[in-house]
Length: 471
Ligand code: BYC
Ligand code: FE
Ligand code: FE
Image (cartoon, protein in one colour):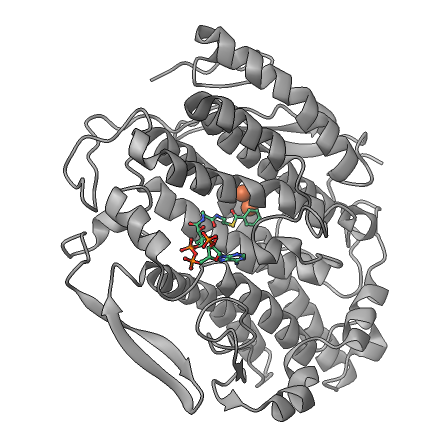
């Protein structure tokens, strides 16, 4: 177990001081990162003290420290979870062999690709969210936004460390390019679709942290199974931070639902827009958008890339070791959806071919849990409307459904029906404008914007009215 060097220029538990070349290379990347942060990170409040959690260790107890810091002075560090003694590869062609501490030459380019795709999403999300602080519904929420942002910055550091440490010159070039691609840039966009969409308002932010950060959870959990041990240990620790991001999404959407329900009761109507709320059907349409865009992040239903990663031991399944099968998946089969011109069917393929779909299934099941909670809240106050996840084929740009129109309830529909129904299924411009119109920043401690309920509790046992960001 390597000691934590918390006072180093780059805090770390990977003994950077013991590898001068690497340390120098990362210290050269550091100012480029800060420059990027100041230019494309949060567009306001950069020099306000924010009550932030900083990773200082990876142990079971006390891995984080909470205090007010100005974001550019945040201590972004490199932390790997403790090494598991005698860890063995759990799946694929190398099953049972010792895990790797270095990158095998034959898997170098695949591993590099995985690190780059993962790393690219982290700064992308910071760019997408950069203007949101101006319209934060409370200081509590502004602080949570910044917490998510600095940790996504740390996740970039996590991938950049691996690229620098294990991929030499190529890795350093890739690390530089992470700061050169930008979300939504026409010439040099981020790699995955969802990370080039805008996050223009706080409802979108809550949906994004609920649905898209959850893709992060499942991808990281699959990479945690990797035979490449440093990647596994990196992801293990990232997942700990990720839990808070999804908490922000789950409680954020939940608080909007709660506020809407309050307004529905108070004014005895489903239409709470005149009273500064967000109607449930608009929430449903935002949900439809963010869920479908996030489903695309899992790739096509069948993928030779994913099969190769698995066979090689680079990327496993969610909770690989708890699964009761041969962990090779070459002979066992499963059904995957198939869109045809005459309807939605299924075809049988090996599980090895269908790994993206299997991970997507696990993800969908996890997504449903939040909806169950929100719907319970609605039922408890006597509202019989329910939020629903749309069909997996709805509004998809990747995979079998890409060239088909599918309704949220899972029917193949004609172009004409799609066009006629689109405003029932996805937020219209007018609805987006309405949501935008509600976004007025609230910066008085303890006060909340009118479209969202107060949280049940503050952060780290502080009261809700705590001065989370000093104005
Ligand atoms: N957009 O074989 P297929 C997070 C490409 S989120 C654009 O099905 P594969 C976070 C694909 O690259 C987690 N292109 O794909 C959340 C391939 O291209 P090539 C991020 C796409 O490789 C919130 C081709 O289509 N981490 O951490 O099996 C805030 C064929 O597709 C897309 C990871 O994703 C798309 N959506 O699966 C902050 C983990 N989908 O090679 C952070 C690492 C596919 O033919 N990535 N393509 O040119 C992977 O494991 C895989 O690359 C993917 C795609 C699961 C993404
Ligand atoms: Fe992340
Ligand atoms: Fe995240």
